[in-house]
Structures are given as structure tokens and as C-alpha cells.
Length: 116
Length: 114
Image (cartoon, rainbow over all chains, first blue to last red; front, side):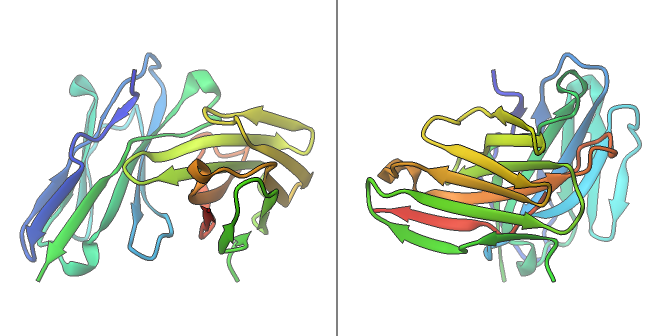
């Protein structure tokens, strides 16, 4: 069974629109970490955020915000007032205590296209 | 200078050739990883190593081997490359002391097998 599901394969928006990228995860652990990474067209992976399972407080960083809900096993990512530079593939990932936090399981990614 | 470097950055090779991808890090991290990325499939773990004497298979290790020559170096080899190994390969590191296993990625190596 897929442990990290990013159901949206591709999303297209027009600049200044708000957009939410969904991430649903599956784990039996009570302790785990969730991550979001960004992969711009240049190809490198850029770390965006880390959240542990005991901290359900939502986080805002500039135009980016994250909504963590354990009740629905979701860790969604919202970009407010999107910009062309936000165009990238975004990955959600999970690190579990039962693996000693030794590995990351990635979702398949969501490609975000922001047009002018 | 980048903390995690990969060489080469791009490589084109032919079916049946042996090829090695190298990864070096200056972060002083114990843990190192190799991933491959195929379009639409995200990143899949090939091998990982927690120290020089520790090597572990990931989810897609068939057709690959690795060598941890030193704490700072972790190489990935394709003994006999095949076209479906055409992909983007990433090396990553993490610090054993960081409980969350945040991983730091290299710039990637784009490999094409003809």
C-alpha cells in the first residue's frame, strides 16, 4: 500500500491564484515526521518544511502555509497568491519511527504550473 | 561550495556498459542514500548506508551496487547498464543525531542508457 499519496498529478493555475497541494499518508506509528520538498525545473530538491506528529499547529512562512491534520492523515500545502517562480514539482515525504527514522518514503509528486 | 556533490552531472552510456556515479559530502553526516527519480514516480530508494561498514538495500536495489569508501563518499554502480535505468539519480545525506532524518540532497545526475 502506498504510504504517501499525492493524488494531484498536475495542477495549473494563473498567477495570483491560491493553490493547495494535497498529501495523505499512512502509518501505524504514533511518532513520525512529514516533509515537503520542492523540485524546480532546474532539477535540484529544495527542503521546504518538516513537521513532527506531535505538533499539529499549522505553519505559515510568507506565502506558504501547511495544514497538518492527524485525524485525516493529511499534510496539505497551500501557496497563496501564486507566482510563476512557484512552478515546480512538489513532493511530500514521510519518516517513521518503526524504521528508526532511517528512510524517507516519498509521494509521486505534484507538478504545479503557474502561468502569467 | 555545495555540501553534497555528485559526479558526473550528466552521463550518456550504452547498454551493457559499467558505470559509476559518485557522491561526496562535506556535512560530516553519517548517513548517505541513493535514490532514482523517474517521471511520475517520485523518488525511490536504491541503497542507503549508516556508516562505512553498514550498507542496506532499498526498494529498488536490483541491478545496482554501492560502495561506501569513506564517511564522506558513497558510490553507486551499474554493473551492466540497461535502458530502463535511464533516470535522474540523487544522493542524499542525513545526520544520525537528527531524530527526524531530514535529508540533504545533491544536485542530481542525469543518466541516459542507450
